[in-house]
Image (cartoon, rainbow, N blue to C red; front, side, top):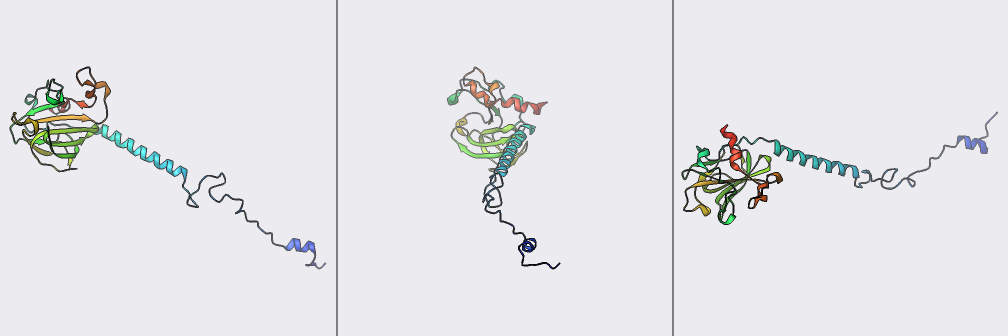
Length: 221
């Protein structure tokens, strides 16, 4: 039986189905749930969260690395030993304008070499009123090492240090003028250590200022 291609039935059978566009039904920005997508350039929430987690993780890792890094401390004046400073001088009072002595004084002939106590990075080198010629370095455990009353400075800004790296020479600059040459050495923790606070004068500051003699003691063992 010939097929009548003009009949409504055959027309329906031979007509190619037309696919309706769903573009209008699809949200113009985002996925089916309406969330932002990267296809149309809209910001994506998940990558931002992932980046934030990575930044926080990197900071935590850096912070932890600073704590676990070994100090391997040495006495910061060449040829000096425990007899060259008074172990009772740390936090001794009264002590000039500062009230208490927040470090130790290592006595040595003028011009004796001053060296880095531990690994670190020079953050400041210059001259200030009280300390005279000074060097400040950031070391392990997030501690600042302060070397003062130098006669000369022999290191540069942002210079990486290792124990024994040359910093300068012993002197009497700043408010040490007229006194026997010595190195004033202080160590300050950038992170508070509240269990070290005491009832002494300015005792709360001992949460930050550490006894340098205890740090260099390991070099004598």
